[in-house]
Amino acid sequence: MATTPDFIEFVCDQIESSWNPRYRKMFGEYMVYVNDKPLFLVCDNTVFVKELDDIKDMMKDAEKGFPYDGAKEHYIVDVENRERLNDIIAVLEKIIPVPCKRKPKNQQPRRTNKG
Image (cartoon, rainbow, N blue to C red; front, side):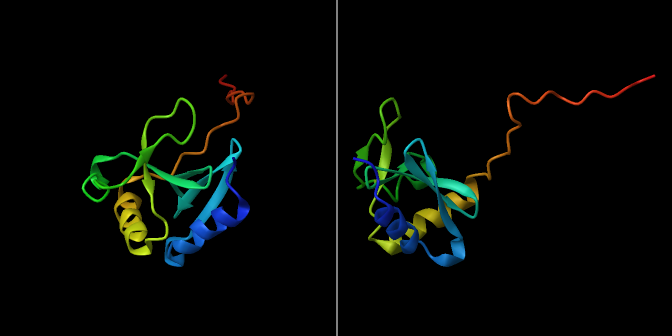
């Protein structure tokens, strides 16, 4: 079962607007970005976050699961608990970098004429 459009909208509505939440469809599921940083995977109407040491204490009672086949185990985030959700974001937003833009694979590097 794929994530429904209503659910991904609900997830982003739970995040304080000051964090500038947005989502992007990826491989049939979704990535939620906060201030352009990828923080949450949303698969099968379930929100996942990586098991990182910075949030280990905060997530000690959280369920765990696998967002997709072949993935490492992640914490499952209860998005209805807005206070906890925004606490997680406050920690992760400081440590997760904004992804670098990749060059297309078929683009050749520019050559300069020397001579």
